[in-house]
Image (cartoon, rainbow, N blue to C red; front, side, top):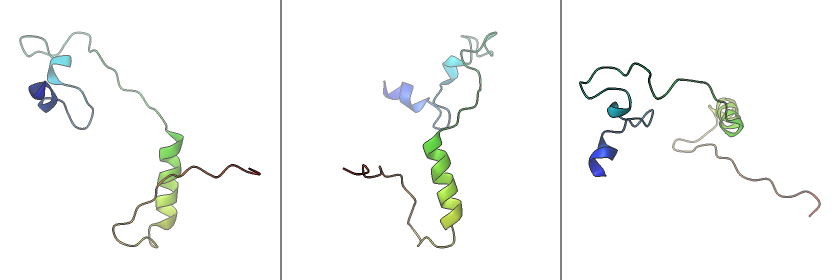
Length: 72
């Protein structure tokens, strides 16, 4: 299991054996295809970071927190 984890790319989460055949050649039909995805939470964080970039103290970051229920 440890060797399998070590061979996993930290960026995309795949391993070489998911892209290459036993001879080390690219698979004719890859197991994955790239696509886009938008996370609304990440979008809000990115906007807030841009808005507060010059006002945040060093080491601080913007985080999401759940709003309090209204009228409750």
